[in-house]
Image (tube, helix red, strand yellow):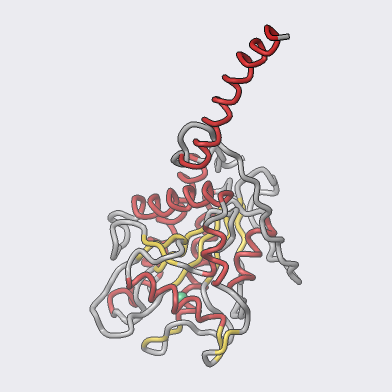
Length: 293
Ligand SMILES: [Zn+2]
């Protein structure tokens, strides 16, 4: 009997020590070190949409799909300067990018809006999710509140807190698209910080960051950038947790040089070529070929 107890003790002591080690690691261990825990979080349901935009390009559904979002639209003109409205510039840019991608082949393309139409910010990302997009890009051309002389494009990804004050102000302005006369129409950006703790988003975040860097790399010599690195802020339109998403401020509508670049066909083509190249490299790096059939 005594021998049995000793044997049992010999067996139980290492088990107990190991258990304590695991418990200590869970409590005090740094994340990412030692054990790798899998946390499953249910993604929010894709909101039902009345009508989904059509997908253009190859019929082969295994080809990667990019959803291009022309910022603003309909009753929301976006920024205005010299009689030019941001919503018209973004639609022209979205069409130019779609044409450039279709010309190269191998990539499927859908536009959140292909005419002058109002969409909630949440609808834009919901379209991307419902279509099963592999990439989402929201195009903008904002203005500065005061004439700071700011010029050039900025690439943004999602984060709970802005990378700086300028980024936070930009996100606040873009998020106001869901308000009429200051009254919020739909509950929106409060869940932006909540989804950031969602571990399932980590992969999308890394891919968004990669795409943002590729835009900056491919655009060198083709178009001017204000910031050499991607910026981030709590943009409500980027909240799709499972689709890599980037918001591209293509320039300042109240800067004469930027405005004439964005209005000109050559400027739009340079922008479309920059983005199309970045999109192709992105899909190649993600293991999704974008080669013509
Ligand atoms: Zn905008």
